[in-house]
Amino acid sequence: MGGNRVEAVDDKLPIPLLSSYNMGCFHLSHRIVLAPMTRLRSYNFVAQTHAVLYYSQRTTKGGFLICEGSGISDTAQGYPHTPGIWRKDQIEAWKPIVKAVHEKGDFQPNGNPPVSCTDKLIQSDVRIGESDGAFFSQPHRLTVEEISQVVDDFRVAAKHAIEAVRPSWGPLYSNYCDWPCSAPSLSINITEFRLRWGRDSWSKRLPNRSIHERPSKRQADEYGGSIENRCRFPLEIVKAVAQEIGAQRVGIRLSPFADYNDCGDSNPDALGLYMAEALNKYNILYCHVIEPRMITQFEEDITESSLLAMRKVFKGTFIVAGGYNRDDGNEVKARGGADLVAFGRLFLANPDLPTRFELNSGLNKYDRNTFYTHDPVVGYTDYPFLDINS
Image 1 (cartoon, rainbow, N blue to C red):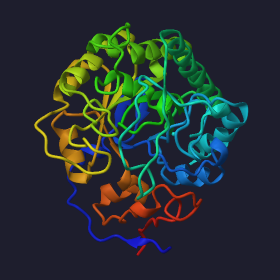
Image 2 (cartoon, one colour; image 1 turned 90 degrees about the horizontal axis):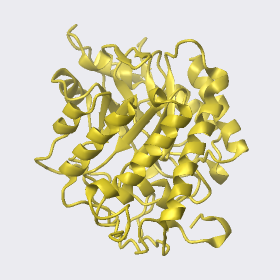
Image 3 (cartoon, rainbow, N blue to C red; image 1 turned 45 degrees about the horizontal axis):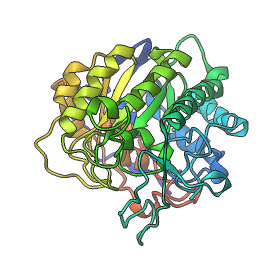
Image 4 (cartoon, helix red, strand yellow; image 1 turned 180 degrees about the vertical axis):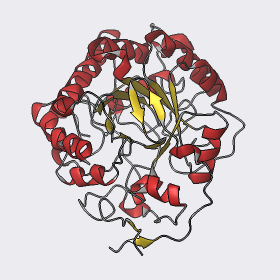
């Protein structure tokens, strides 16, 4: 595919998204973040060589990439062809991806049911990458004792994530590749785990389901009922991961306002605020939050809710995501609503997105039909770069 021509260049005014930022000990040259996106191209739950090109295409000096979610254990898989981080071969598969970035994210074992905070079936009729109705297996509701094992799965996955990137470390990191290990996220220096979206890959998204009152019907134990109890599980994960790899390398992604796949809350503002405040106890590096307008999976909605309260109470780096473009991304940074802004579909379709924002050029249009196919090229690495010389 040929490159696009530059259509226009904006006046030489300061561009907030292109200003530098110090995130803990990491110096970022700009504030445009690649949001984590499931792409379903990791065959047999192993990251593939075509991911080397995909992530290196989107790498800029001093940029921050959050890579796709990677399962923390064999019980954490809810879709085919998503990467994992619990086996040695999976750890090894991530290493060339990290190296490339530095140089220029019913599939249960033994037929067991998926694990969840509830034993109730999801009633949604939509599944990722498909247009027809979905079938969800009957989940197994975790006992209190089993929850501790999942917490440890996150800890071990974070350790594996660090192992996958350690050979590439240098004294200072100007490029980051962060896999939200679905829960932990692999990262060149950072592990993000995700309490995001209502999409249910079971233990992969289990912390997200546990904090929302609708799916979490655990009134009889310490993990259900009140906001404090429902947030206990993810906070235990934060503590375990921070103790394993250091709080300065831990981030979290939250989506308290998400309301689909039977995963919603009657008071998401209070839920988000409680989590933002509670996270300060652990001194983690950043909090990455989905905007309230992204109540559903793909489309924006009108809402009076805001992330401002969470922004004010959280003491670390605050990242926002959810339907942003160049203009409102610059605006939210300029008014202090966020330190960094994550872009998903725009970055997917425009691997040189920071350059396009700098030049205020036209953007490639993304093709939703190729988001979740298994093709290693089409809709993955074939989006064109700008033809700057034309």
